[in-house]
Length: 430
Image 1 (cartoon, rainbow, N blue to C red):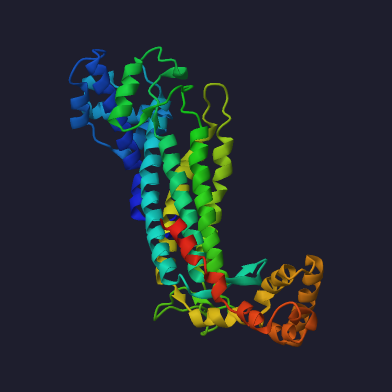
Image 2: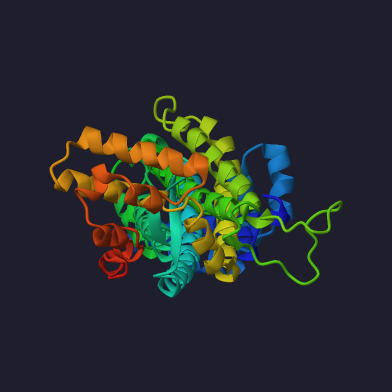
C-alpha cells in the first residue's frame, strides 16, 4: 500500500524483515521440538537463534539464482549459523513456513485492528451519550420520515462496530492455526508432536488436517470480515457526507484554520476525509472476492493463491487500519449543529406526525384505508400549499369529530418519539 494511506505499525508487520523474522521463529521452534524428541542433535536451535540474522538483501540475492524464497531464506541463515543449521527444516515443506508465517502476520494485524475498533467504539459511545436527546429527522429513501435523536443514529453505528469487533475476534481465532505437517500434510517425514510444540510456542492451534497448505476458507473468512468492516466504515462516512451537504448541513468534518477546500472557490468546506474513507472501503472490499477464489486450489496444493495473498495480505490490513483510525478522528472532531437539526426537523411543517394522526383515527373506529386516504390528502396539501399540517387537520370535521383538539395538539409534539430512547440506550450500552 502507498505510504499516504499507511501507518507505521501495520507497515512494519508486513515488512520483509518481519516476515523473515517470523519464518525464523517457526524454524527455531521446530528445531527445539526436534531436539526435545531426539530427532536432531541438541544445540541447533540455540546456535541458529544466536547467529542467524535476517539479511533481506542477501536473501534476495540468493532467490534471484534459485528462484525459491524459502530455500533462499534457509541458505542465508545457514551461511551465518554454520553446519548445525543443516538440521533446520527437516521433514518440513515450504508451506509449513509460508502458511504458519502468513497466519501469524494476519493475527498480528488483526489484533491492531481490534484496537482501532475500540477507539471508534469509545468515540461513538461518548458522542452518542452527549447527543442522546438531540432531536433530528430520520430519513428513509432520502426523504423525511419521523423524528429520532442524533444519539440514536450514533448508537446504531456503535452497535454495528460491536458486531464487527466480535466478527474480527472470531476471524482471528479461526486463522490462528499452524501447519508443520510436511509434503501433502501426512507427517510422513516429521513427527506430529513437532507441530503441537510449534503451535504452543507461537500461541497458535495445530491445523486439524492440512493438505500441505492450511485450507484457504480460513483466510477467506478473515478477509470477508475485513470487507464487512470496510462496509461499516463506508456506511458511517456516507452518512457524514450526506449530513454535510449545504442543503442539510447538520454537521461537518473538522476544518482546520489553514485548511483550503477548493483551489477555485474559497468558500468550500468539503467532507474530504469521509469521501476518502468511502474510497478506501471500496479497496478493502475488493480483496474479498480474490480471497474467496483462493479456496479452490488444485488437489493438495498449488500456488495460485500465493500472488494474491502477497498483495491482499498487506494491502487489506494496512488500508483498513488507516481507515479505522481516520474514521475515529473524524467522529471525534466532527462539528455538530443541533439547531440546524431542529430546523430541518421542522422543514416539512409537521408531516412527520402523519402516522400518529392515522393511528388515532383507526383507534376511534375508522377503517385504516379511509384514515390513510384522509391524512394523505392533507399531507399533500400541506406540502404543495406550504401550510402546517396541524392547521389542515384541525379544520377537517371528519377528523375533529373523532379526535379532540387537545389530543391533536399532543400528537404534534416530538417528546413521544423519544420516550424509549433510554430503553434503547440500555440495550446498546449495557
